[in-house]
Image 1 (spheres, rainbow, N blue to C red):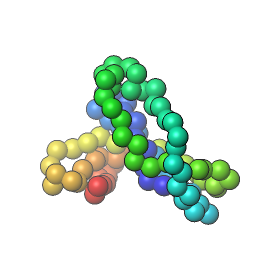
Image 2: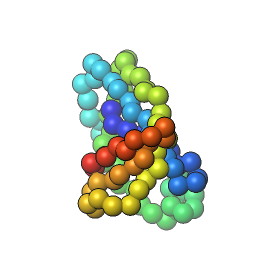
Image 3: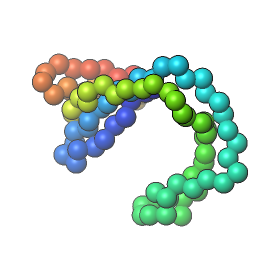
Image 4: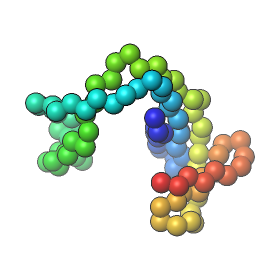
Length: 94
């Protein structure tokens, strides 16, 4: 399970890493689907594309404690340098 991000509104982000075990993805073919976010501005009128759909049940998972990070300029276009609250730098390669 990758990372979840949430903007704090002041340029900083909360970064939370999730972990799951014992999950064997079983793809589904949805007959119908909808994401309500695309009914609201600024996404209204945008046609979302469903990338994947999986059944998720009975999967043990947990979330690590969130870290507050501040993006820094620099690095390659697919890298981000962040200052982690409490000191230190973390390089995230996407």
